Image 1 (tube, rainbow, N blue to C red):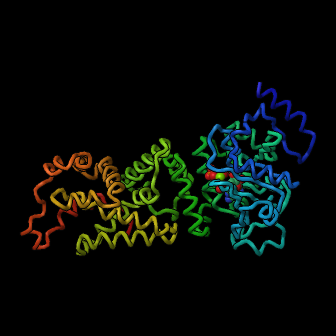
Image 2 (image 1 turned 180 degrees about the vertical axis):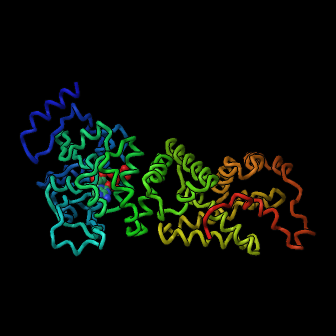
Image 3 (image 1 turned 90 degrees about the vertical axis):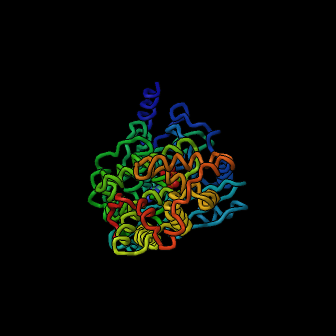
Length: 451
Ligand code: ATP
Ligand code: MG
């Protein structure tokens, strides 16, 4: 029935070149009530002022897939200044891409003005590899659809007519679960290499096949990601890891050669069986938490992804005679510094990562005050979850994880009875013999490439 209706719509509209396919509500199935109040308000206000305005991009795509959109973006023919003037609480943001944030209560709606094609005079706005540095040439709705990345991301929904407008065949691609880049794949990736990461992430998240022309140039152009500013790479990587489909996404990154030099530990995933197990466990764990609507901490995730780098560097320093604790701290700094060059992990995350790592050796101490002190540490919970991950990966004794689980759940009386006799007797400690206990953590698992 839907197919028949769609065919009728196609046939009727086929005679209008350049015109969008107009898909009625009976076929697309999106209901006006599914649009957020802020986006709806924004569109109605802009229309009252005589502008065109639509819900666009990821929200339309997700609704058509039956998913709840994370946010609702609006596209309009009003300029950023006109949009700002139309609302009481609105401000212009961005340089590479100017847009307006319109605030309704707690909701922020991103409003972008239709973009047009780049003229010859804009060559100066590209880098030597064709990457676009500014994108502020305005155009009409059709041109706006054309400069979007994938056909499924170029659909417009008009809540007043309840129609979807499709200039790029995105609706048919979506129904066929086909991810197709708009225009010539190679030049679109050169304009913005991040589109390669987006292709992989969206295909994994939505269970789509990447159409051949969209896929084939990726391995060849993957090195262009080196030219993307580290902060943007970090943002996109975070989206990928927190998509709820991190395992599939990372596997797809590897399959498409997109990991090299991007994230050194992704190389390790393929090359070092133990590191791979650990990272994959962490990703699986994250995916499950996201699907259960539990919070996930990017700091925890990055700590897991880089743990085997830290272990390798730690062991290396210990072998060179550096005292264990000092070696661990130097190793952490080394690994963070190395990643900072490519990924720019913000300080607020790297501080958490360091805490999680540096607390690991302390779990070996189950005696007296030290066990209680660890329990009270503000980062205890994350560090404990991390310990469990290490137990799952058989690099820490399962018994140790179980002990800490029981210790947390016990009442004060039980806790006292659980404490081990001091594991580092005073006499020995005075001789500075703490190293053996800590080396158990670095163990034999530190087979990474950090150095
Ligand atoms: P999600 O928000 O679920 O991660 P999204 O597609 O909404 O996915 P956004 O980054 O919010 O991603 O982008 C909104 C829209 O802007 C996209 O749907 C697409 O139309 C367009 N867009 C985003 N990034 C690019 C890009 N690199 N090149 C061209 N168009 C893009
Ligand atoms: Mg979005």
